[in-house]
Length: 163
Image: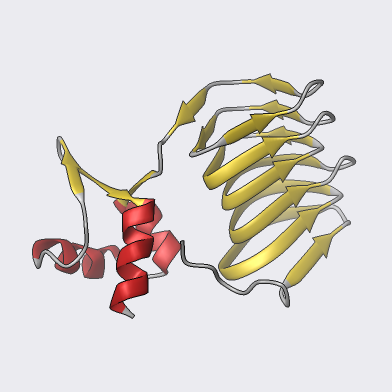
């Protein structure tokens, strides 16, 4: 697994915010206040126990201790602590739900498979460039109907040996 250094990029949001927060570089983000909109991050996202979030969330590792109303996509994993309240669907590779957590939604285990769009976001590379790699046989890919799916572990191995 490719590890990225994220310890120097920590953002702690305790105020009320509205809009979109998008991070293309790895960051450790913690939301402690109210947030409404969209959250997209690489690295770790923690929703604090007093947080009230109304947003669709995408990230690598997501830890929820507060309230989230919206869908969550976590490419590496999600943990709902005992104080978590999630009202929405989750799409995740690994899930941990502690006793006392409230989860009202659907859970889809993606088994480490990511779409072209997710891979583009993850690598911060345009989809067109990834398709060039696919057509040239340079990146491991599976085709399911008309969709391309990429195994996260294979992609990380490919990156480690390629660069």
